[in-house]
Image 1 (cartoon, helix red, strand yellow):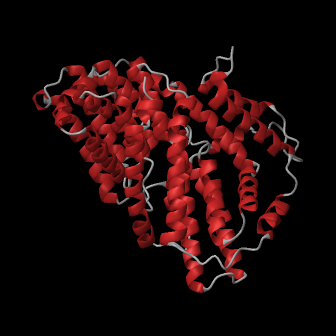
Image 2 (image 1 turned 180 degrees about the horizontal axis):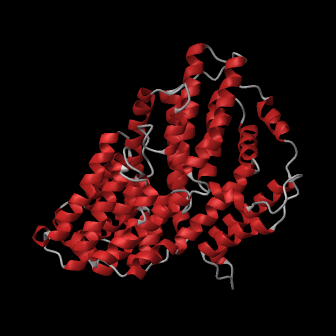
Length: 477
């Protein structure tokens, strides 16, 4: 981000706020909704330009909304303690434990051992491992966990001369981009895999008074992940970075890596049990008679238990997790999430959503399918240069107004925004996984743009088809 962009944002944010807030004729809104709109534009401008650190900007609704009369202080602040925020906190804590005790490496090597070590099977195995981890761990953390594994595989292939120079380059590019893209695609399947998914659920709860469970989203999102991963595999191995399957990594590579990790430790076993139990309860807890556990309760029970159960590691006293480990928790992301929910709550309290509905009512003349396609494309390419959390925080509340304006159920419009904002594949700045693999010496920006553009197009098609046909069946209330 350039300094000019930073300076422009600092000036533009409050300037747009003043224009909207002090000139009522521009919008024709009453005082409260006009204040909410003005605050939202200011915060969104600073999110986009990063005029201030994004987490710090996310705290602005706490004082701007009550000062301007947009919402009560209690409304502005309670959103930061939304149950979805705590569900995410619990998920992040489990992820930190998995990373702390190297369980992710064992999972990845075990998948490689199962699937084989020819070039295509390695791409498949690494892709599946990355997508699986990203269902439960943030895409950024997943990519950073899997990148060293991918680089080790590339180094092994280079040192043992399994491929000629041209095929080695194709193998390296395909493998690394698979890590980046699978980290984003895997997150589509679960509520904790991608922040926009949880924004969707939090705003549906706030503005539509509808509880969407982990299971509800999983049934909707998991098939999308499966389809996108299938497309990714064939695209990378058969079209974009095809490598003759004559060479392969040593069959002992995964075994050697597992041997270096040693026998599964007590800590890993405990984390695996807690992780598995948490996932089971998130997915199937609603079907167990007499058990009334929310997703947030399950998440926090798991997180707290990691501090309670003692570790048996020499020289380390305390639990599987100790509080010092929480320094690495992405607190800023939780604040960003809370800031978006705070603005969404103010949208609801001030009836600003209805104003957007009136403005967008003219879109009724367009077919619903065309609206989904245009919206998906707009959101996806916006996310190429903006934070996906910022995009979803800004557009999901507006999408409710769009749905009201065109006279359709809001969940489809909201789902398009949530899903499309997680599928930016073209630029290193688009997502943390893209940036992570770009930091290696094997990927050029030209590689990423050319490969990512067609995946963007495929993503738009898959998302729109699933939202149009599948969402009304499994995610309609």
